[in-house]
Image (cartoon, rainbow over all chains, first blue to last red):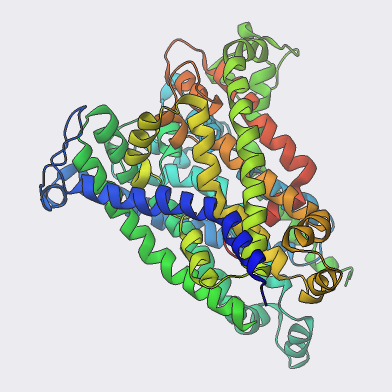
Length: 295
Length: 272
């Protein structure tokens, strides 16, 4: 049991961090909620009560509707793309091929780079210019007679977000691969061998034995990627700047608050963003900690 | 289990295809950087340079060096301080639990996932009120919002150590700090490497805090690079060279310490 002196000491040592989290996370969230319920507009704080006015205005705001549509497109393409690609890479690398380590490092290196760098490079790769000014991937497609692949990338109406998601897949699919690879490595070898003795081929082994066993990995990947895509911000800014067709809640919040000085509205957007992230993450934390203690 | 299986050799086809996908952007980044100003043209972006020239890197470095320095000034203290806080917290939450520790831990963890937009308005107000601004304010934000991930990594590591290790030291009369200092700290080096790399990378790569908390003299590299890319005056080849300079520190860390980097990644998804 803890001696008294040590108990006080441990509380004393951890309290600066707890205090910091209490203030900077929970205190500030409460403060943001309060701002979202106020009329604050302009440089000077104004906490006069506005009720849910800012939230109600958002639901009939065409820009916010575009944001929701864009987030859905981005999330769909990015999450599905990263999961399929990451899973395939993990399965291939799980076959004990020569050079496995090299390919694994190669698929993961974009994770070390900032979204800003990724964005600046992909903005030139996805250059939408046509004809004699064509460059980037379109130029590459045209050189290899793959003209049907030439497209307007992030300037495509409505589906431009899918091009942004492609850059995000480039950045994050290695992470999904690492998750799956760790999951595959944890599947006991005896299970695979038993399946093969029973006459299952490689594909059937994956389909019926391994895939069900790594469902928790898929769940984690879905939640981590899903919550990341709700927060997407830097990547879009670096590829396309602040353009209305590629707007998302995180950019709207930033622009309306710090450029437009509509603090109340900005705070309301940020709280909606927080709620959508919390709906995914809180059950995830609870689930992870529960399985943690059971082990 | 290494088995030679010729039937699996066809798997190299998708592997090489994927490798090309991951390397394409790096290829453009590199060849563009090494071309001379005279040779740079969007229409020949894929061709190899005629001769090696460093014009672009020199120009990009001249423009970006103060901001690279800003990034280092902010990232180094942010990384070291949050790593130490995480180590102490992890130790207490794993091995020196007080009542309520199991409620505190998930509350700390949640802080790692929040969209930072939801705290940014109060953060700016608060920093202005206490008069901490620019790079110090940015470093402080990275320290505080880094606490969840650093605490998590150390807590998981310390929790995996057998309790007997501590009991033996306590028998010898060591108090809490003695146990931490003499027993746990020396064997925590790998976890420190994981956490230091993680914090270094995320603080270096951050844009949101940086763009809101700093002004044009103390921008870190991400903000400076983004503004460079947004300007019409600076040629795209210089932007490409600048991107490589901005990515180089974290890329080098990844190349030399990749194993620890991956452990940090998995820890960050609560799967470490």
